[in-house]
Image (tube, rainbow, N blue to C red; front, side):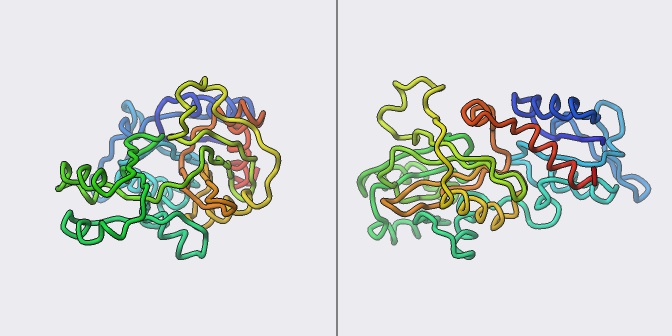
Amino acid sequence: MRILIIGPKSEENISLVNAGQKRNHQVKLVSLHQISLLVQANKMKAYVSGQELADYDVCLFRGISPYFAKAKTVANFLKLRGTEVFDRKIYSKAFGYGKMFMTFEFFQKGLPCIDTFHFSTFEELNKYLVKIPRPVLIKDIAGMHSRNIYSFQTKKGLEQFFLKRKKKVKQFLIQKKLNANYYYRVLVVGDKVLGSMKRMSYFNPQRKSTPLAKRSVRVEKNKEIESLALQAARATHTDIAGVDIIYDGDNPKIQEVNRSPKFGRFTEVMNVDVAQEIIKYLEKFNKI
């Protein structure tokens, strides 16, 4: 099988290349930025380093935010050429929920989600400010890997944050901060749950003093969490998903679904060969 992986040269993506080669597949890893697109004489072609990008059986997209438009264009091009594309949502739907719109999707499907607020203007935010429960988290809608996350206990702190960013209000979402020092990362590949591990929350007071290797631990099989993660992956049409679930007291809530999850730590903690599981999943769609 000829496999094309589009994404950065990360540890996880290199492990996918190695896993594919071990199973006797031809695997190529390219960055989305390396791909050139040409339309000439009413025909479209894609190139990487002077070589035409064509004749792949399957393509796996990983790490394409925030370049959704280009990713969708390349995905549609490959699909037209007969390549099976993953994540399939890239070409089949309007890709790119963003964090706020992902929460709305959970709500639509009747899944438990955290109270979340998104405003288009400072004036609109200011009218609703007193009604927003605190403490809160503020997240960059396009943020990844726990970047650009802020916490505020008071209305004044929240107000001052947005006073400095009046023209950028719509770039952030506000979310109720739950009193939990841990959350769960569940990895889903297709209809298979590979397991779940408990991780220290970003604002856990012990996080900074805890070595990276000890911030995530294996947990026993939890049917409630795993079933919820599978539903969340399906609700967002995600083939390969890292689902984050946090407890609000005794009630699990979905934080988000990561479309191109890192899995190096998960592989170590859970002793699961995630790269091989992903390659096996791709094989199913090539009828191997």
